[in-house]
Image 1 (cartoon, rainbow, N blue to C red):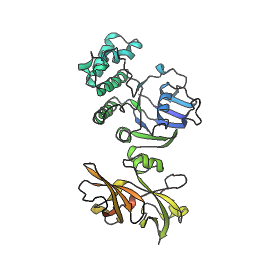
Image 2: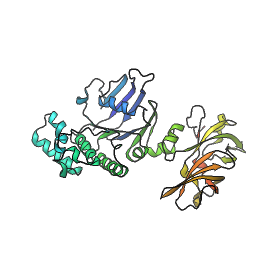
Image 3: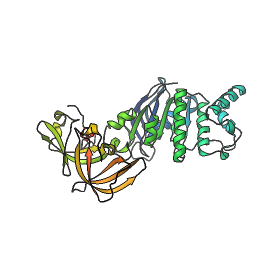
Length: 373
Protein backbone atom coordinates (compact mmCIF):
# COMPACT_ATOMS: atom_id res chain seq x y z
CA UNK A 1 0.00 0.00 0.00
CA UNK A 2 1.08 3.58 -0.49
CA UNK A 3 0.28 7.26 -0.31
CA UNK A 4 -0.04 9.33 -3.48
CA UNK A 5 0.77 13.03 -3.39
CA UNK A 6 0.05 15.32 -6.33
CA UNK A 7 1.37 18.88 -6.17
CA UNK A 8 0.51 21.63 -8.67
CA UNK A 9 0.09 19.09 -11.47
CA UNK A 10 -0.50 20.60 -14.90
CA UNK A 11 -0.84 19.30 -18.44
CA UNK A 12 -0.78 21.31 -21.67
CA UNK A 13 -1.37 19.40 -24.90
CA UNK A 14 0.23 20.67 -28.11
CA UNK A 15 -2.22 22.80 -30.04
CA UNK A 16 -4.46 23.39 -27.03
CA UNK A 17 -5.28 26.99 -26.20
CA UNK A 18 -5.83 26.17 -22.51
CA UNK A 19 -4.14 23.67 -20.18
CA UNK A 20 -6.09 20.42 -19.86
CA UNK A 21 -5.05 20.24 -16.19
CA UNK A 22 -4.36 23.34 -14.13
CA UNK A 23 -2.27 23.14 -10.94
CA UNK A 24 -4.09 20.16 -9.41
CA UNK A 25 -3.02 19.26 -5.86
CA UNK A 26 -4.32 16.15 -4.10
CA UNK A 27 -3.27 13.84 -1.27
CA UNK A 28 -4.48 10.23 -1.30
CA UNK A 29 -3.99 8.42 2.01
CA UNK A 30 -2.67 4.90 2.41
CA UNK A 31 -5.51 2.48 1.60
CA UNK A 32 -7.93 5.23 0.59
CA UNK A 33 -10.43 4.93 -2.26
CA UNK A 34 -10.31 8.34 -3.97
CA UNK A 35 -12.71 9.14 -6.81
CA UNK A 36 -11.97 11.80 -9.43
CA UNK A 37 -15.37 13.00 -10.63
CA UNK A 38 -16.31 15.48 -13.29
CA UNK A 39 -17.85 15.97 -16.74
CA UNK A 40 -16.16 14.79 -19.92
CA UNK A 41 -13.13 16.91 -20.78
CA UNK A 42 -12.54 18.16 -17.23
CA UNK A 43 -9.01 16.67 -17.05
CA UNK A 44 -9.60 13.78 -14.68
CA UNK A 45 -8.30 11.06 -17.04
CA UNK A 46 -5.25 13.20 -17.87
CA UNK A 47 -4.47 13.36 -14.15
CA UNK A 48 -4.79 9.58 -13.88
CA UNK A 49 -2.54 8.97 -16.89
CA UNK A 50 0.13 11.29 -15.50
CA UNK A 51 0.05 9.37 -12.20
CA UNK A 52 0.43 6.13 -14.18
CA UNK A 53 3.32 7.48 -16.23
CA UNK A 54 1.41 7.13 -19.50
CA UNK A 55 1.34 10.88 -20.13
CA UNK A 56 4.27 13.34 -19.74
CA UNK A 57 3.84 15.92 -16.98
CA UNK A 58 3.98 19.56 -18.09
CA UNK A 59 4.49 20.90 -14.56
CA UNK A 60 4.12 19.76 -10.97
CA UNK A 61 5.00 16.58 -9.10
CA UNK A 62 3.58 13.09 -8.57
CA UNK A 63 5.00 11.25 -5.55
CA UNK A 64 4.30 7.72 -4.31
CA UNK A 65 5.17 7.14 -0.66
CA UNK A 66 6.95 10.48 -0.70
CA UNK A 67 9.17 9.55 -3.67
CA UNK A 68 8.75 11.72 -6.80
CA UNK A 69 8.07 9.52 -9.82
CA UNK A 70 7.87 12.12 -12.61
CA UNK A 71 10.80 10.54 -14.43
CA UNK A 72 10.21 6.93 -13.34
CA UNK A 73 9.02 4.72 -16.25
CA UNK A 74 5.42 3.49 -15.96
CA UNK A 75 6.52 -0.14 -15.57
CA UNK A 76 8.63 0.74 -12.52
CA UNK A 77 6.00 2.70 -10.57
CA UNK A 78 4.37 -0.41 -9.05
CA UNK A 79 0.96 0.76 -10.23
CA UNK A 80 -1.79 -1.34 -11.84
CA UNK A 81 -4.27 0.35 -14.15
CA UNK A 82 -7.67 -0.90 -15.32
CA UNK A 83 -8.93 0.74 -18.50
CA UNK A 84 -12.41 1.43 -19.83
CA UNK A 85 -11.71 -0.89 -22.78
CA UNK A 86 -10.44 -3.75 -20.52
CA UNK A 87 -7.31 -4.05 -22.76
CA UNK A 88 -7.25 -7.85 -22.66
CA UNK A 89 -5.11 -9.87 -25.05
CA UNK A 90 -7.66 -11.53 -27.38
CA UNK A 91 -5.39 -14.45 -28.37
CA UNK A 92 -4.66 -15.41 -24.74
CA UNK A 93 -6.76 -17.42 -22.30
CA UNK A 94 -8.03 -15.85 -19.08
CA UNK A 95 -5.24 -17.64 -17.21
CA UNK A 96 -2.62 -16.23 -19.59
CA UNK A 97 -4.09 -12.73 -19.37
CA UNK A 98 -3.97 -12.85 -15.59
CA UNK A 99 -0.43 -14.23 -15.61
CA UNK A 100 1.01 -11.90 -18.26
CA UNK A 101 2.30 -9.15 -15.97
CA UNK A 102 3.83 -11.65 -13.56
CA UNK A 103 5.66 -13.45 -16.38
CA UNK A 104 7.06 -10.13 -17.57
CA UNK A 105 8.47 -9.61 -14.08
CA UNK A 106 10.10 -13.01 -14.00
CA UNK A 107 7.95 -14.50 -11.23
CA UNK A 108 8.45 -18.29 -10.98
CA UNK A 109 5.83 -20.42 -12.72
CA UNK A 110 4.54 -22.16 -9.58
CA UNK A 111 4.06 -18.80 -7.86
CA UNK A 112 2.28 -17.39 -10.94
CA UNK A 113 -0.15 -20.30 -11.03
CA UNK A 114 -0.84 -20.04 -7.29
CA UNK A 115 -1.55 -16.32 -7.47
CA UNK A 116 -3.63 -16.56 -10.66
CA UNK A 117 -5.83 -19.33 -9.26
CA UNK A 118 -6.23 -17.48 -5.97
CA UNK A 119 -7.41 -14.31 -7.69
CA UNK A 120 -9.62 -16.28 -10.08
CA UNK A 121 -11.32 -17.97 -7.13
CA UNK A 122 -11.86 -14.64 -5.40
CA UNK A 123 -13.42 -13.09 -8.51
CA UNK A 124 -15.48 -16.10 -9.59
CA UNK A 125 -13.34 -16.67 -12.68
CA UNK A 126 -12.15 -20.21 -11.95
CA UNK A 127 -14.55 -21.85 -14.47
CA UNK A 128 -13.32 -19.54 -17.23
CA UNK A 129 -9.53 -19.81 -16.96
CA UNK A 130 -9.25 -21.76 -20.23
CA UNK A 131 -11.52 -19.41 -22.19
CA UNK A 132 -10.45 -16.52 -24.36
CA UNK A 133 -11.95 -13.01 -23.97
CA UNK A 134 -14.34 -13.35 -26.94
CA UNK A 135 -16.11 -16.19 -25.06
CA UNK A 136 -16.76 -14.02 -21.97
CA UNK A 137 -19.53 -11.57 -21.12
CA UNK A 138 -18.75 -7.90 -20.56
CA UNK A 139 -18.87 -8.34 -16.79
CA UNK A 140 -16.55 -11.35 -16.93
CA UNK A 141 -14.05 -9.42 -19.07
CA UNK A 142 -14.16 -6.59 -16.57
CA UNK A 143 -13.38 -9.05 -13.77
CA UNK A 144 -10.43 -10.41 -15.74
CA UNK A 145 -9.11 -6.85 -16.15
CA UNK A 146 -9.55 -6.31 -12.41
CA UNK A 147 -7.92 -9.67 -11.64
CA UNK A 148 -4.93 -8.82 -13.81
CA UNK A 149 -4.42 -5.73 -11.66
CA UNK A 150 -4.99 -7.54 -8.35
CA UNK A 151 -2.65 -10.44 -9.11
CA UNK A 152 0.30 -8.08 -9.34
CA UNK A 153 -0.27 -6.87 -5.76
CA UNK A 154 0.65 -3.27 -6.69
CA UNK A 155 1.04 -0.29 -4.38
CA UNK A 156 -1.71 1.65 -6.16
CA UNK A 157 -4.75 0.77 -8.30
CA UNK A 158 -5.84 3.22 -11.01
CA UNK A 159 -9.26 2.84 -12.65
CA UNK A 160 -10.26 4.84 -15.73
CA UNK A 161 -14.07 4.64 -16.05
CA UNK A 162 -13.97 0.82 -15.90
CA UNK A 163 -17.74 0.30 -15.75
CA UNK A 164 -18.92 2.62 -18.51
CA UNK A 165 -19.19 -0.18 -21.10
CA UNK A 166 -21.49 -2.32 -18.93
CA UNK A 167 -25.29 -2.30 -18.91
CA UNK A 168 -27.08 -0.82 -15.90
CA UNK A 169 -27.70 -4.04 -13.94
CA UNK A 170 -24.19 -5.38 -14.54
CA UNK A 171 -22.71 -2.01 -13.60
CA UNK A 172 -24.31 -2.23 -10.16
CA UNK A 173 -23.10 -5.76 -9.45
CA UNK A 174 -19.58 -5.05 -10.72
CA UNK A 175 -19.46 -1.83 -8.73
CA UNK A 176 -20.31 -3.77 -5.58
CA UNK A 177 -17.62 -6.31 -6.43
CA UNK A 178 -15.04 -3.54 -6.83
CA UNK A 179 -15.98 -2.02 -3.47
CA UNK A 180 -15.73 -5.42 -1.79
CA UNK A 181 -12.35 -6.21 -3.33
CA UNK A 182 -10.87 -2.84 -2.46
CA UNK A 183 -11.99 -3.13 1.16
CA UNK A 184 -10.55 -6.64 1.42
CA UNK A 185 -7.24 -5.72 -0.20
CA UNK A 186 -6.89 -2.27 1.34
CA UNK A 187 -4.91 -1.07 -1.68
CA UNK A 188 -4.73 2.67 -2.33
CA UNK A 189 -7.10 3.34 -5.24
CA UNK A 190 -7.75 6.29 -7.54
CA UNK A 191 -10.90 5.88 -9.62
CA UNK A 192 -12.00 8.15 -12.47
CA UNK A 193 -15.67 8.47 -13.42
CA UNK A 194 -18.26 10.92 -14.69
CA UNK A 195 -21.00 8.90 -12.92
CA UNK A 196 -22.01 10.55 -9.67
CA UNK A 197 -23.67 7.36 -8.36
CA UNK A 198 -20.36 5.53 -8.64
CA UNK A 199 -18.62 8.41 -6.89
CA UNK A 200 -21.13 8.62 -4.05
CA UNK A 201 -21.26 4.89 -3.38
CA UNK A 202 -17.63 3.91 -3.92
CA UNK A 203 -15.37 6.71 -2.73
CA UNK A 204 -13.99 7.35 0.75
CA UNK A 205 -13.56 10.85 -0.64
CA UNK A 206 -14.35 12.46 -3.97
CA UNK A 207 -12.42 15.12 -5.85
CA UNK A 208 -14.69 17.07 -8.17
CA UNK A 209 -12.99 18.63 -11.19
CA UNK A 210 -14.19 21.16 -13.75
CA UNK A 211 -12.28 22.74 -16.62
CA UNK A 212 -8.99 21.20 -15.52
CA UNK A 213 -9.19 22.41 -11.93
CA UNK A 214 -10.13 20.91 -8.57
CA UNK A 215 -13.39 22.44 -7.38
CA UNK A 216 -13.99 20.52 -4.13
CA UNK A 217 -12.59 17.55 -2.20
CA UNK A 218 -14.40 15.80 0.62
CA UNK A 219 -16.43 12.85 1.81
CA UNK A 220 -19.31 12.14 -0.60
CA UNK A 221 -22.16 13.18 1.69
CA UNK A 222 -20.26 16.25 2.93
CA UNK A 223 -19.79 17.43 -0.64
CA UNK A 224 -23.41 16.67 -1.49
CA UNK A 225 -24.77 18.51 1.53
CA UNK A 226 -22.33 21.43 1.39
CA UNK A 227 -21.40 22.11 -2.24
CA UNK A 228 -18.56 24.59 -2.65
CA UNK A 229 -20.18 26.33 -5.60
CA UNK A 230 -23.12 26.24 -7.96
CA UNK A 231 -21.34 23.86 -10.35
CA UNK A 232 -20.98 21.19 -7.65
CA UNK A 233 -24.55 21.84 -6.50
CA UNK A 234 -25.93 21.04 -9.96
CA UNK A 235 -23.43 18.36 -10.96
CA UNK A 236 -23.87 16.23 -7.84
CA UNK A 237 -27.48 15.14 -7.55
CA UNK A 238 -30.07 13.60 -9.86
CA UNK A 239 -32.19 15.57 -10.47
CA UNK A 240 -29.76 18.42 -9.79
CA UNK A 241 -30.30 21.14 -7.24
CA UNK A 242 -32.86 23.79 -8.21
CA UNK A 243 -31.09 27.15 -8.64
CA UNK A 244 -33.16 30.35 -8.67
CA UNK A 245 -32.40 34.07 -8.55
CA UNK A 246 -33.50 35.50 -5.18
CA UNK A 247 -33.26 38.94 -3.61
CA UNK A 248 -32.06 39.15 -0.01
CA UNK A 249 -33.74 41.48 2.48
CA UNK A 250 -34.44 41.71 6.20
CA UNK A 251 -37.55 41.01 8.22
CA UNK A 252 -37.01 42.21 11.77
CA UNK A 253 -33.69 40.78 12.91
CA UNK A 254 -33.67 37.99 10.32
CA UNK A 255 -32.65 37.67 6.71
CA UNK A 256 -35.20 36.57 4.12
CA UNK A 257 -35.00 35.61 0.46
CA UNK A 258 -37.60 36.67 -2.09
CA UNK A 259 -38.11 34.77 -5.33
CA UNK A 260 -41.13 34.65 -7.64
CA UNK A 261 -43.93 35.69 -5.23
CA UNK A 262 -42.43 33.82 -2.27
CA UNK A 263 -40.68 35.17 0.81
CA UNK A 264 -38.80 32.60 2.86
CA UNK A 265 -36.69 32.91 6.00
CA UNK A 266 -33.10 31.69 6.05
CA UNK A 267 -32.58 29.98 9.43
CA UNK A 268 -29.29 28.46 8.26
CA UNK A 269 -27.74 31.89 7.74
CA UNK A 270 -27.24 34.46 10.51
CA UNK A 271 -27.98 38.01 9.43
CA UNK A 272 -24.34 39.04 9.92
CA UNK A 273 -23.21 36.50 7.31
CA UNK A 274 -25.54 37.98 4.67
CA UNK A 275 -24.96 41.70 5.28
CA UNK A 276 -22.79 42.14 2.14
CA UNK A 277 -25.63 40.73 0.02
CA UNK A 278 -28.66 42.50 1.51
CA UNK A 279 -30.63 44.25 -1.22
CA UNK A 280 -28.81 42.26 -3.91
CA UNK A 281 -29.79 39.24 -5.98
CA UNK A 282 -28.06 35.95 -5.17
CA UNK A 283 -28.53 32.39 -6.39
CA UNK A 284 -30.76 30.31 -4.12
CA UNK A 285 -30.52 26.53 -4.21
CA UNK A 286 -32.89 23.84 -2.96
CA UNK A 287 -32.55 20.11 -3.62
CA UNK A 288 -35.63 18.33 -5.03
CA UNK A 289 -35.83 16.02 -1.99
CA UNK A 290 -36.22 19.06 0.30
CA UNK A 291 -39.56 19.90 -1.32
CA UNK A 292 -42.63 18.00 -0.07
CA UNK A 293 -46.22 17.41 -1.09
CA UNK A 294 -46.94 16.06 2.41
CA UNK A 295 -44.21 17.25 4.80
CA UNK A 296 -43.05 15.01 7.67
CA UNK A 297 -44.31 16.03 11.14
CA UNK A 298 -40.83 17.13 12.25
CA UNK A 299 -40.82 19.78 9.52
CA UNK A 300 -44.16 21.37 10.42
CA UNK A 301 -42.67 23.95 12.81
CA UNK A 302 -40.35 25.52 10.23
CA UNK A 303 -42.18 24.58 7.01
CA UNK A 304 -42.75 27.16 4.29
CA UNK A 305 -45.62 26.56 1.89
CA UNK A 306 -45.45 27.77 -1.70
CA UNK A 307 -48.14 27.76 -4.37
CA UNK A 308 -47.17 25.97 -7.58
CA UNK A 309 -48.67 24.52 -10.73
CA UNK A 310 -47.70 21.13 -12.15
CA UNK A 311 -45.98 21.18 -15.55
CA UNK A 312 -44.98 17.53 -15.72
CA UNK A 313 -45.22 14.33 -13.67
CA UNK A 314 -42.55 11.62 -13.92
CA UNK A 315 -43.39 8.45 -11.94
CA UNK A 316 -40.20 6.46 -11.30
CA UNK A 317 -41.65 3.63 -9.23
CA UNK A 318 -40.25 4.30 -5.78
CA UNK A 319 -40.72 8.07 -6.18
CA UNK A 320 -42.22 10.70 -8.44
CA UNK A 321 -40.62 13.80 -9.93
CA UNK A 322 -42.75 16.90 -10.36
CA UNK A 323 -41.81 19.83 -12.56
CA UNK A 324 -43.53 22.90 -11.17
CA UNK A 325 -43.90 26.61 -11.81
CA UNK A 326 -43.89 28.83 -8.71
CA UNK A 327 -47.02 30.93 -8.16
CA UNK A 328 -47.86 33.04 -11.17
CA UNK A 329 -44.23 33.25 -12.32
CA UNK A 330 -42.37 31.36 -15.01
CA UNK A 331 -39.71 30.13 -12.56
CA UNK A 332 -39.51 26.33 -12.55
CA UNK A 333 -38.45 23.86 -9.87
CA UNK A 334 -38.29 20.06 -9.63
CA UNK A 335 -39.59 18.25 -6.54
CA UNK A 336 -38.91 14.62 -5.61
CA UNK A 337 -41.97 13.33 -3.77
CA UNK A 338 -43.67 10.05 -2.86
CA UNK A 339 -44.83 7.51 -5.41
CA UNK A 340 -48.51 7.73 -4.43
CA UNK A 341 -49.17 11.32 -5.49
CA UNK A 342 -52.47 12.04 -7.21
CA UNK A 343 -51.17 15.25 -8.83
CA UNK A 344 -51.48 15.56 -12.58
CA UNK A 345 -50.34 18.04 -15.22
CA UNK A 346 -52.09 21.38 -14.81
CA UNK A 347 -53.04 20.85 -11.14
CA UNK A 348 -52.46 23.56 -8.58
CA UNK A 349 -50.25 22.18 -5.80
CA UNK A 350 -49.18 23.50 -2.42
CA UNK A 351 -45.58 22.38 -1.95
CA UNK A 352 -43.75 22.61 1.35
CA UNK A 353 -40.18 23.82 1.43
CA UNK A 354 -37.65 23.19 4.21
CA UNK A 355 -36.04 26.62 4.80
CA UNK A 356 -33.11 25.13 6.73
CA UNK A 357 -32.12 23.19 3.61
CA UNK A 358 -31.65 26.28 1.43
CA UNK A 359 -28.24 27.09 -0.06
CA UNK A 360 -27.04 30.52 -1.20
CA UNK A 361 -24.39 31.22 -3.84
CA UNK A 362 -22.59 34.40 -4.85
CA UNK A 363 -24.05 35.43 -8.23
CA UNK A 364 -20.67 36.58 -9.57
CA UNK A 365 -18.19 33.98 -8.33
CA UNK A 366 -20.84 31.18 -7.98
CA UNK A 367 -19.10 30.20 -4.70
CA UNK A 368 -21.25 29.14 -1.76
CA UNK A 369 -21.99 31.96 0.67
CA UNK A 370 -20.57 31.08 4.08
CA UNK A 371 -23.04 30.34 6.84
CA UNK A 372 -20.90 32.19 9.38
CA UNK A 373 -19.96 35.87 9.40
